[in-house]
Image (cartoon, rainbow, N blue to C red; front, side, top):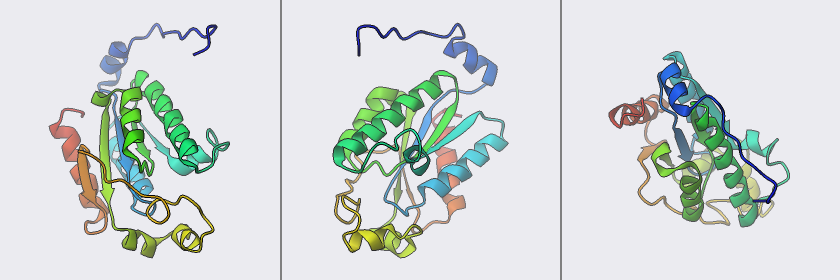
Length: 197
């Protein structure tokens, strides 16, 4: 941090916001291969929480890449920087008492550890969306697997770059075998039984 940077604090404390909003801030960090259903699941979960009166925001990978992180490529260094920026942004959201849902591939364990270090591990509910490369490639809504297999996209998770299985995520949901309503219910039940909601 530069010597002339002085972070400031709001007069409204997090405790004030928790009391006013009647909710605790946390992030549901959805991770998994491209095509596993992260974005779809994120917006459905957001809708469920919003309909119950929660203050909630979804931060999606493609949306961040088209704005805040449009200067970044897909090298490992740039991917790490992308996730670092998002984690810092989520941390700011949580300080205002908002619940966040994120949808990012997050293929490397060292990046997942970094995210928890930035945000605080007690605020992160990391959910792994389990779906085989074969099924994701079959869905391929953006034709990314097709491009990756034809070497038109480099460092593509699951094809030319390894997706590391998460080490002890809070929850694993199978988006290949289970319908989305089942996945939403599993996440919601986890949040309820672990006193996030």
